[in-house]
Amino acid sequence: MKFGLQLGYWGAAPPQHAAEVVVAAEEAGFDAVFAAESWGSDAFTPLAWWGSATERVRLGTSVVQLSARTPTATAMHALTLDHLSGGRAILGLGVSGPQVVEGWYGQPFAKPLQRTREYVDIVRKVLAREAPVTNDGPNYSLPYTGPGATGLGKPLKPITHPLRADLPIWLGAEGPKNVALTAEIADGWLAIYYTPRMAGVYNEWLDEGFARPGARRSREDFEIAATAQVIITDDVAAEIERMRWITSLYIGGMGAPELNFHAQVYRRMGYEKEVDEIGTLFQAGKKAEAAAAVPDELVLETAIIGNEAQVREQIGVWEASGVTMLLVSVPDVDQLKRVAPLLDAG
Image 1 (cartoon, rainbow, N blue to C red):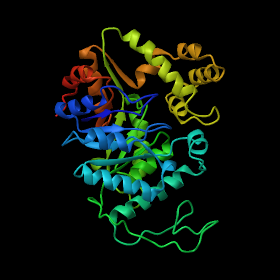
Image 2: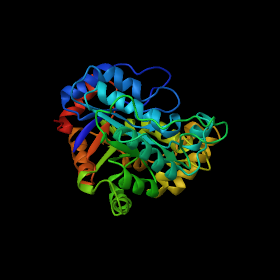
Image 3: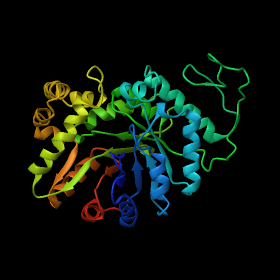
């Protein structure tokens, strides 16, 4: 199993020590560094800026939101980063949710699976650079022929020759249909709130995609990158308490009450009652009560917390469940140096 550094997205300000942590991750033998975006910082710029001080680690987006950019614009970003990094870019894509897509980007959220398939296809056409890029829609017409069109649109190929036509595209996916689509059309799965206990279910979803006609990959050459908090501590209870607040935010506040993909993930794990209670409390403004309603076992499902021996044991469990890359986040170099030996990186 390989290991990646998950930088995530920025809060109110850029994270401290990120530049040093990225360099330290490469020195420690990490395979990749990933950056995310929500509705603040973007994913590409931190990779270009901090990644410029590295030579080996792959630089991935986890994830770029489809509605933030047209498919051709995203392909331009990816091919640019790939050139600047000498062929180290990984393009991670995700649909986000309706609150962000319609509220922040002003785009319709409908038919996310259809949009994802079409989006990835256009990006691959750009990277292949075999012909001027055209697409008949229904979501992305190239040339554009919809309302307000001048009729002067011209199919184009990228001026810059992409460094790699096969630049890897990984998809962030949470539900069964999206995971199956990922296995069919992508090179890897960026899994959030992954739990080894559900590995058999995940494999069913993935196998459905691998079995489809024209599937791009097989299980043997497909990457499963799972994000997990990895915390070395002798006070597990204190770390669980801290993580209750983060977990309750994603279950209760990172999505509409009617459609919250993160909450659905935990429902599939069997926490329907707990998710309902957390969501109700959070939406009522009772954030402390919502956090208190998060049970210990729900936190421990998707995190690795304990002393060095316990963390090492749990890492083995995640690897045995099929994870090919564990994405970890650390606040500073000291924490990275504590974690790195347990990962057996490099």
